[in-house]
Length: 475
Image 1: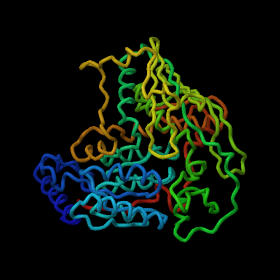
Image 2: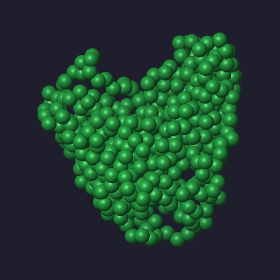
Image 3: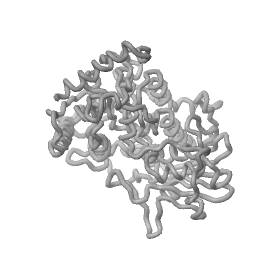
Image 4: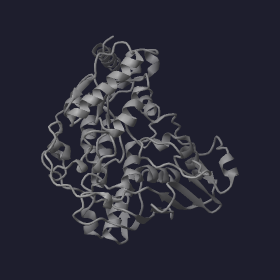
């Protein structure tokens, strides 16, 4: 069966089902969950047709193969502003399905512009694996068009963007999962359940250890001609126009770590790059996934003002929550999250697991992905009447199952936004070099106009979030 016929039969079924069921209340264009049991193992409703927005390092190493390996998905299309990467992405996907011998697969569609991919009525859901400054606009466009979304972390480039995205997702009814895959790793779930159920007594301190970049390693580059295969103007998106250099964007001849990760214009450095993972785990363990801190302070080393790579270097921050718990973060701490309570501690990290070749790993013979002050803490069994966190065997599979069967989404947008907010608040405090007071309900600083100004970023025309959306699809 062709992908076009498959999508058509699924959508026709959804239409007919909605006419005579309680599902008729679902508004037109909203994402629709159809139980897998309705069709059987190989029926069209058992597959989600996916379009990949971004074909770079993370997409190739993690998100596209992580989605394709499940029979509940079929990646039909790929999009990238670099035509060279676009064609390599198409070949990557085509080769996977050719080797798998999957019947009915013709050829991966290619799009330069994400708007066209989202408008494709054959596509049910999208993966957004773009640079940080290109997360929110495609995600809002997608959920407004009735698509589900898997989006790489961090949730946004600034806090106002993240709040807007979370609100849009909740209005749409879409399943949006943040790429906080540590939630789907068993040691992180176990650590957070043990903390939430009081196995280390009253929690009072959390240590978050993060890696950092060294921006001073960047040597200045003069302006270069824009490669003919790159739509650099659109790649800059809503951020200010600056001259092109390769270290500002991504390597032209390989998929090694790109320079944009180290540019404030496009992100905040490791405080969001890895901080989004570890602060999310801190929130999960505290049960503060829908709120935020009340006090933030911190310091950091910064490169020269004219540096191309200008994110923070070595840093230390302190974040205080209303429950009295202090979250101390620094590159001086071991990479991971350490929960400290009145009766012991638990430390959790990824161990030797990596997503990309540049990911840090545990060092030393005695390094453990999960450790505690007393081994008996880790042997403790969570009782039936205690707190049980969502169980996910694999992150992308959980996203697909959430769409198809209603399985709980382990990394929803609000949790992703709140984790990202902690990171961005830390970054603002590091820049202003003073203690800041935060209202997690209003999501504003108290009596600090300078800090509140930093909650937003200017948006270059025509890439503003409020520019208007005209992408439509039909069920």
